[in-house]
Amino acid sequence: MKKTVALMDKFICLAGGEALPASSLKGDWVEQMVADGVLLIVSNGSRKRVRAIDGQAFREHLSNKYDIRNLEQYRELLLSDDPDRSVQVAVTGNSKVRGKRTFYGFLVNSYQPIPATVNGCSKTILPLEGTFDFIYDYWNFVIPEDVVIVGIENPENFRYVSAQKKLFSSVVPDGVKLLFVSRYPQEQSKDLLDWLQSIPNRYIHFGDLDLAGIHIYLTSFYPYLGERASFLIPADYEYRIAHGSRERYNHQLEKYGKMQVTDPRLEELVACIHQYHRGYDQEGYIERI
Image 1 (cartoon, rainbow, N blue to C red):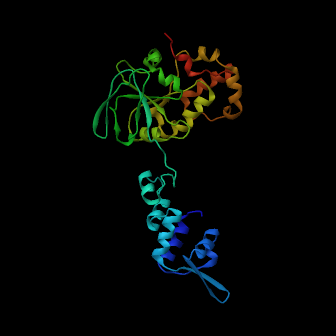
Image 2: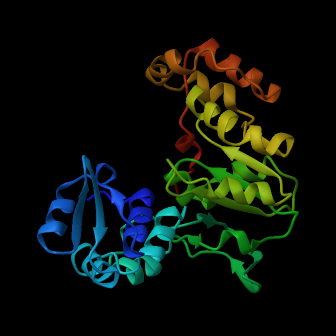
Image 3: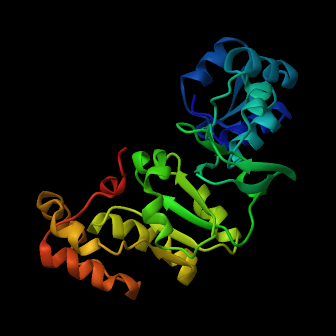
C-alpha cells in the first residue's frame, strides 16, 4: 500500500460511511480487506462501489495492520514539509514515515573569543584546539555586527584556522575579529546561507584558488549576499598558482572554463589561473609547526 494524501482522503470517506467507486481503490490490500470482512463491495448493475462495513472497525484495522493510528493526523503528516520525528512516532509508531533532516545548522570555529548569544543566552565562541562548536538553532544565533565571517570550504583548513593567522590577518584591519564557519553537510545544507542572509556582517569566502573554488563562491554566495561578500585573494596568489596543479586545472576546464565571472573583483584571479593553466589548493596556506 502506497500511503498518499489522496488515499488518506478516501479512507476518511470510507470511515465516514461513504461508498466509493471500486475503480478508485486499487491494490491487493483492497481484496484482503474484503476477505477480512472490513470492506464490502456492492454491485449496482455494471457499477461496483466499496464501503466500510463499520467505520470504527475500519479505523482499527488500519491502525493494527498498517500503522495508521489516526487518519486525519496521518494525512496532515503527509502534507507536512518537515515533520517532527516525535509526531511521526505518535501518529504511526515509525519515526521515518517522512524524511527529516537529522541536523540543522553549521560549524563555527575561532582562535579569538567571539561573544554571541544563542536563544537569548550568552556564549563565547572559542573552541578548544581540535574541536568545533555546532550551531543548531542558527535562527537564534547572534554575533556582533563588526565580526567578519570567514567561510571555509576545506575541512583541514577549518580545523587549523590558528595555523593560518598570518593569511587571515592580512585581509582585515587590525583588531577585527573573525568567526570561521563551515557548511555541514557541505553538499546539501543551506542553513549557513540562510543565516548569512539574515545578518549584516561582512562575509569572506576562503576556497581553493581554482576554477571550481571560484564557481562555488559565484553561485552559492555572491548572488545572495552581494557586495558584502568577497572571495579571499591572498597577496601571493600569482606565485601560488604558478606552482599549483596543472592536472587540477585540466580536470576543471571543460566544466568551468567558460563560467561567467559576475564579481569583477575576481577577474584578475581567474585570468591568472588561465595564464598558468594551474590551480592551487587552499591547504597550502596551513603553516605547519
